[in-house]
Structures are given as structure tokens and as C-alpha cells.
Length: 75
Image (cartoon, rainbow, N blue to C red):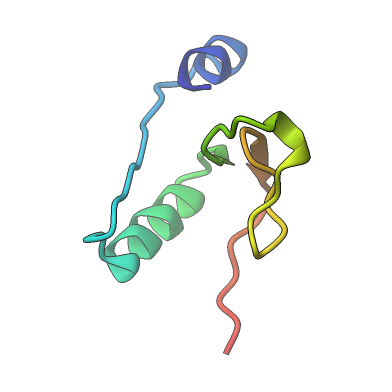
């Protein structure tokens, strides 16, 4: 996804990967900073043997890319 998006926007891609040890607050702050700079944001979910018919418990389609239009903190 990084290469395609950078080709479409002439931007410099950055990937934020995380594992079970990730710090959600650190990632959130990086994303908020990118939004303030006017960066285009996207997200992707891991692939699945069932393809895009598979969904996570929260309804995220597996193996799919998403556009992030706006970050907002909900209290």
C-alpha cells in the first residue's frame, strides 16, 4: 500500500507497524502529528485465508485497506 499511495500523491510513505508490545499512546501521538501536518492517512488489516469475506470481532474486513479521513478522540 505504501508504494501505491506515494505514487498517487507524490508523498513519502511511512509505515507504523505494531505487535503485542506496542504503545497505543505513542502511535496516537504520531498519527495526530501527521494529521496536523496535512498528511494523508490510511490503515490496513492483515490478510486472511478467506479473503475479504473474513471480518474481525470489531467488523474490520481482513486484507483490506482503509482511508483515514479524520482522527478524533472520543471521551
